[in-house]
Length: 99
Image (cartoon, rainbow, N blue to C red):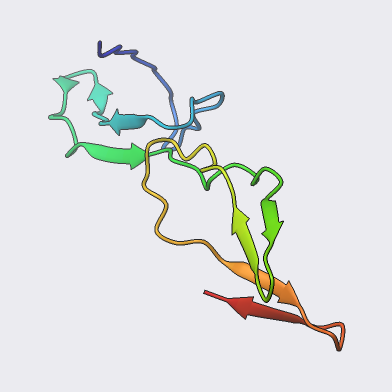
Protein backbone atom coordinates (compact mmCIF):
# COMPACT_ATOMS: atom_id res chain seq x y z
CA UNK A 1 0.00 0.00 0.00
CA UNK A 2 1.32 3.44 -0.90
CA UNK A 3 0.82 6.18 1.66
CA UNK A 4 0.89 9.77 0.44
CA UNK A 5 1.48 12.75 2.70
CA UNK A 6 1.53 16.41 1.72
CA UNK A 7 3.64 18.98 3.55
CA UNK A 8 3.59 22.72 3.02
CA UNK A 9 6.63 24.87 3.73
CA UNK A 10 7.56 28.46 2.98
CA UNK A 11 11.29 28.02 2.28
CA UNK A 12 13.31 26.02 -0.24
CA UNK A 13 14.31 23.11 1.99
CA UNK A 14 12.65 20.46 4.11
CA UNK A 15 13.86 17.51 6.19
CA UNK A 16 12.06 14.19 6.57
CA UNK A 17 12.60 12.97 10.11
CA UNK A 18 11.63 9.61 11.53
CA UNK A 19 11.70 7.79 8.21
CA UNK A 20 11.60 3.99 8.13
CA UNK A 21 14.64 2.07 6.96
CA UNK A 22 14.36 -0.40 4.11
CA UNK A 23 11.78 1.62 2.15
CA UNK A 24 11.74 3.68 -1.01
CA UNK A 25 10.42 7.24 -0.70
CA UNK A 26 9.30 9.29 -3.67
CA UNK A 27 9.50 13.07 -3.48
CA UNK A 28 8.16 15.79 -5.76
CA UNK A 29 7.65 19.49 -5.14
CA UNK A 30 5.76 22.34 -6.74
CA UNK A 31 5.46 26.05 -6.01
CA UNK A 32 2.37 28.15 -5.37
CA UNK A 33 1.81 31.88 -5.64
CA UNK A 34 -1.25 34.13 -6.06
CA UNK A 35 -1.65 32.90 -9.65
CA UNK A 36 -1.78 29.20 -8.76
CA UNK A 37 0.46 26.15 -8.73
CA UNK A 38 3.45 25.25 -10.89
CA UNK A 39 3.89 21.80 -12.37
CA UNK A 40 5.49 19.21 -10.09
CA UNK A 41 9.24 18.63 -10.23
CA UNK A 42 10.43 15.29 -11.59
CA UNK A 43 10.06 12.58 -8.96
CA UNK A 44 13.17 11.87 -6.86
CA UNK A 45 13.35 8.36 -5.42
CA UNK A 46 15.33 7.84 -2.22
CA UNK A 47 16.26 4.34 -1.06
CA UNK A 48 16.64 4.16 2.72
CA UNK A 49 18.43 0.84 2.81
CA UNK A 50 21.05 0.56 5.49
CA UNK A 51 24.24 -1.48 5.88
CA UNK A 52 23.76 -5.01 7.26
CA UNK A 53 23.24 -5.32 10.99
CA UNK A 54 26.08 -6.37 13.28
CA UNK A 55 27.20 -9.93 12.74
CA UNK A 56 26.29 -12.51 15.35
CA UNK A 57 29.11 -14.58 16.90
CA UNK A 58 30.72 -17.00 14.48
CA UNK A 59 30.73 -20.75 15.05
CA UNK A 60 34.01 -22.59 14.71
CA UNK A 61 35.01 -26.24 14.45
CA UNK A 62 38.67 -27.13 14.82
CA UNK A 63 39.79 -29.85 12.42
CA UNK A 64 43.18 -31.55 12.31
CA UNK A 65 44.97 -28.82 10.30
CA UNK A 66 42.27 -26.19 9.80
CA UNK A 67 39.39 -24.33 11.37
CA UNK A 68 35.95 -24.32 9.81
CA UNK A 69 33.87 -21.19 10.42
CA UNK A 70 30.18 -20.50 9.85
CA UNK A 71 27.83 -17.61 10.62
CA UNK A 72 24.28 -16.43 10.15
CA UNK A 73 23.31 -13.92 7.49
CA UNK A 74 22.74 -10.51 9.14
CA UNK A 75 19.59 -8.44 8.64
CA UNK A 76 20.10 -6.63 5.34
CA UNK A 77 16.82 -4.88 4.36
CA UNK A 78 16.42 -7.32 1.49
CA UNK A 79 19.62 -6.11 -0.18
CA UNK A 80 21.74 -9.17 -1.05
CA UNK A 81 25.03 -9.59 0.80
CA UNK A 82 27.76 -9.18 -1.82
CA UNK A 83 30.57 -10.70 0.20
CA UNK A 84 31.96 -11.17 3.71
CA UNK A 85 35.23 -9.66 4.93
CA UNK A 86 37.20 -11.91 7.30
CA UNK A 87 40.12 -10.71 9.40
CA UNK A 88 42.60 -13.12 10.95
CA UNK A 89 44.91 -12.12 13.80
CA UNK A 90 48.35 -13.42 12.87
CA UNK A 91 51.03 -14.55 15.31
CA UNK A 92 52.72 -11.14 15.05
CA UNK A 93 49.59 -9.54 16.53
CA UNK A 94 48.50 -7.88 13.28
CA UNK A 95 45.23 -8.48 11.52
CA UNK A 96 45.33 -9.92 8.06
CA UNK A 97 42.27 -9.47 5.84
CA UNK A 98 40.90 -12.37 3.85
CA UNK A 99 38.26 -11.81 1.19
